[in-house]
Image 1 (tube, rainbow, N blue to C red):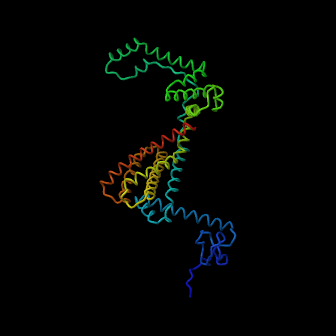
Image 2: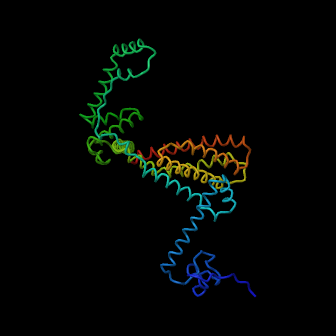
Image 3: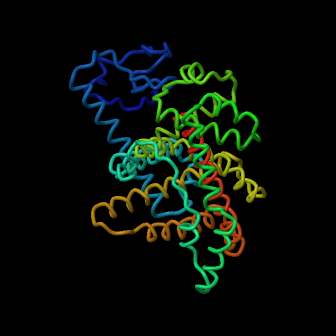
Length: 374
């Protein structure tokens, strides 16, 4: 007698609703098959009712929630174990490392974007201010060994006329910019590249604020300059800089909203250094990448908890959670890679240094890119 598995006999999966062929891909089925082994389609010919729909929805939610709890438990309590389990094939019990990290990053930066008080940065009044330079006042703020040293420096400044010379230079520059902006802009073409680019960017920022120039084509006609990549680039930067000065809070919100993408830019690069450091181990690049995903996920969990505690109780707990993370990271590296304390310390310090360098570099690229395109 053939041994046939017991068939669940309730809801949409009663025997009367079972089929012998998958309605999705046509794969042959037995009555004992609750799902198609080829495409995972439910083996049921019954039309969905509201009850069936809700049952499946909550079943899926509870299943994901169970995965989430197992992932959090393993990640928080057993450093390195979740990565070892995952790369060894135990994957159904845990959430996907990439999706898990992406969710945490989005949640963290979304909380920052919603609750962060970025409006405090909006201190610029939107008016163009003429420079008011006073060299003597600037020198007066410096620290001197004695009063005689200060008097001697002031005497030299007065004898050389530096204060009046610099002030006059700034006035002439401002006057030329205001009275004849077209000729002033064309005069910038004779300057060295770096100085020229900075001066053009400053010119466009001033003109956008003063003359309400909104786009590149409008500026090109108004100030009669040729269309080239340098002018287009400096205009975009100048316009962005003008907008940032007037509404820095909006710029900060934009930066925060895009930080998750900066993280996923440098993590694969950072993983290359992990792979090189542990090149003699049996793990491949993907295994190291999963380890970095899990470690960074733990970092975001701690950052979220720290931020919530700080917001609710008005305290500063960042240093506590960063200390916890530092200890956790060391333990995770030891348990996952199985090396002694000395080797782990050396690699721990090296990889942390690389991590912060790459994080800063990625953030700077993100800020620069946003300034150009803002």
